[in-house]
Image (cartoon, rainbow, N blue to C red; front, top):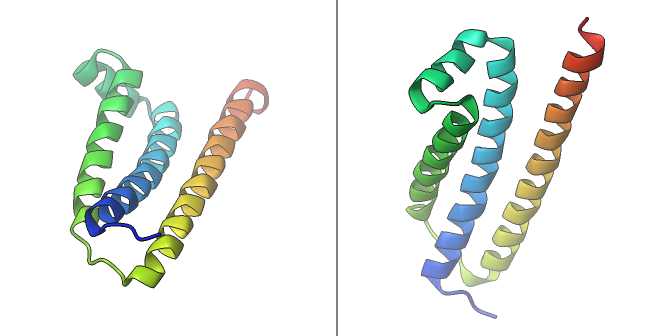
Length: 113
């Protein structure tokens, strides 16, 4: 199965952008709960800190996707392997991000006080 260069680039760009976005959301969620001026800034700028995180994650996704869409395309034999690796990286980063947020909120709810 051959992937066209455009479809390959868009798929790889979306996978990489999603991984960066998950990392960003994880980081800003924990940081905003530890550093209240950031949470207050998100509220001030976007009416609610959740909306702010979503808008900023959308910006991160778009910028990273554009950057990765201009990266060179590997030869055909490496395309499937490259997409498979990118998908696995996204899966692992998503699981780690979810685990970090759950552990942080367990700490906040039960261990901090």
